[in-house]
Every structure is written in structure tokens, then in C-alpha cells.
View 1 (cartoon, rainbow, N blue to C red):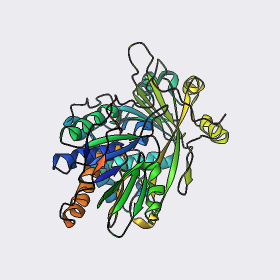
View 2 (view 1 turned 90 degrees about the vertical axis):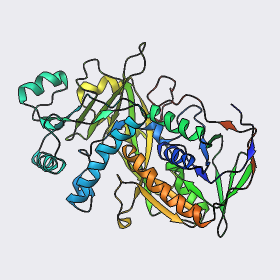
View 3 (view 1 turned 90 degrees about the horizontal axis):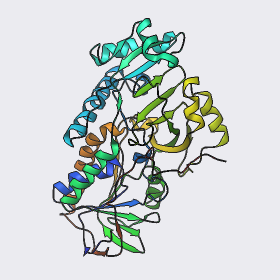
Length: 405
């Protein structure tokens, strides 16, 4: 659909993933009317949100050592557990009631899980060890000799439905979502930023960058060197095994995860698989999964999921990882303010609602200091509105493959 108005806005958000959309909903509800610019999903989803596993995290998967202390881990794990469920309830999206299954082996992982049970204080129904006989019965051909199995409260959720609710709320209160065919370009002066898009420009006293993989380049255009890096995480989307015993299966020994999602009555369920195959990049990086990474990935997939790997396709998602001296873990929301430019990354999608509230506070403080200065007027009559149905990467409308061939 084409837009039909020439107008000004409260401020500009570059990036239309779960954090950008959640911020737009909060800001629009407060009367600030943001303009959200996002890359169009032509043949593949652009937002890393849409390349996600759609996994409602409980915090059990997070290594305690990645936090400054056990208490810091416990506090954030609690936030992850409750905030994700609150976000789903707020928008009427079903909260997963079928838990996952976690397999572990080795003294280190068993010791870590025992400590997490103490810290998280989850019930035995949410986080409890299975008797060996029950584990064999539930896992069937997915059972790994020498492993212990636990029930965990993690489950898949409909992230596209959450995004649609956020976008609807924001649009109903004056936000505008615009799809662009080419990357947005930023040009910063002392206290304002020119935002170039679709052969036009808009001047704003506040621009918020929530563009995931594109954030580094956008900030560099403003003379800002972000103290972080990109982590590429290859995933494979395939047909789920018909005997998959739970919607989420994790094997900590292999570093393997499998998340099941429905694809409609006429198609088998999808499974989104991940392994320890990851790579770090400074700045901009391509999404292509190299042959070497594909080989490493396949070695981390257990035998019972190999058929899903053979008929699957690769998708490369990115995470913005803060460096250690920032004091922020890779799982937590990260916000940096530099005059008119505000950057943020959600950490995990399950805390996007919390991240958006903190980000909104930063935006509101900046907006208030500028005496509620709005953007310059811009003609958006021939821009495309982002109003189409939102699809995740495991849905049948996508056939792209990020594998190097």
C-alpha cells in the first residue's frame, strides 16, 4: 500500500524488528508519532527478529559465567522468564504450555544445572530431572546414551503475532512504518541528523538505531564507533521429525537445539536447528554460511535430526554483542546515547518489552530536552507502508538458502 501524506514526525526509528516495533508502540501511545524505516522483505526476511528461532527463553540456557555474578544471572534469568510471558499475555498470544527437554552429560553441565535449580527456584514441573526409564520412553530414538534429561519451561512462541500486535498498536496511535528498498543513510550535524531514504531526506533531533546487523554501519556514518561486534549464528530450517518428543529439544553436550513450529495444516511442522557453529565479525558481514561452517554445523546435529538437516536450508542470523568492558552481557538490552543518536539492541527477544521501556525513557529524555522538536516535513506519498502479513523465516513463503554453494 502507498502512503498518502506529507507530514512531520516526533522522531525516527531505523530498524523494524521486535525492539523497533515495541518502541514505536510505546512512543505512539505517548503521542510522539515516530516514523519507522525498515528494509523490505523481498525474497528473505531482513530483520534478524524474523530470522529468530521464536524461542521463549527461561534463562536456563544462559551460562552463569557470562554474567558479573550469580546474583546478576539470577536477576536477569527471572526477567527473561516473566517478561516474555507478560509480553505474550499483553497481546493475547498463546503462552507455550508444553515444556522442552534438555539433555546433559558430564560433571560440569550437571553441576551448572544443579546450581541453576537453586538460583532460579523453579518448580519440579517446570525444571525437573527425569528418571532414566521415563527419559528413554519420552525421547525414543532421540535418546542419547550417557545423558541425563530434564524438563525445562522453554517453548516456541509466535513472534510474528507479537510483531503484528506491536505494529497495529503503534499505527493506531500515529506511528508510520515505511519499507525501503535500499539501506537508510545517516548524516549527523552537531545536534540533528539527516536521514536519507528513498531519494528523500528528513531532519530529526532524535534518531534511534535498532537495525541489528546494519547498526554498525549506520552509527559509523554518524562518527560513532560501537564497542561491540556481530555474532553470526547459522540455523537450519527443515521438516520436523514426526516423532519429535517435545517442541524444544536441547543437547548441551553437543551444543544442539531444535525448535518446532507449525507451518499450516497442509505442511509438516518446521524445525529450526542450531549448533555451536558461530563466528564473530567486526562491522558489516555477509549472511552466507560457508562450506566449512556447514560441515561444522552438520557434525553438531544428532543422528535423529540428520534427515531434517538433509532436506533443510540455511539461514544466517546476527546478534549484536557488546564487548566485555561495556559491562553488558550478550543477553541483556544494550542502550548507548550520543547526542541525537540513540542505539539499542534487545539482547533476547523475550526481554524486548523491558528493553523498549528503557529505550523509551532515553528517547523521552532526549525529546524533552529538545522542547518536543519534531522532524522536518517529508513527502511520503510514494513510499510503501509496511502493512503486509508478517512471516517468520521458517514459514513456507520463504525458500531462500544462505548456504554457500
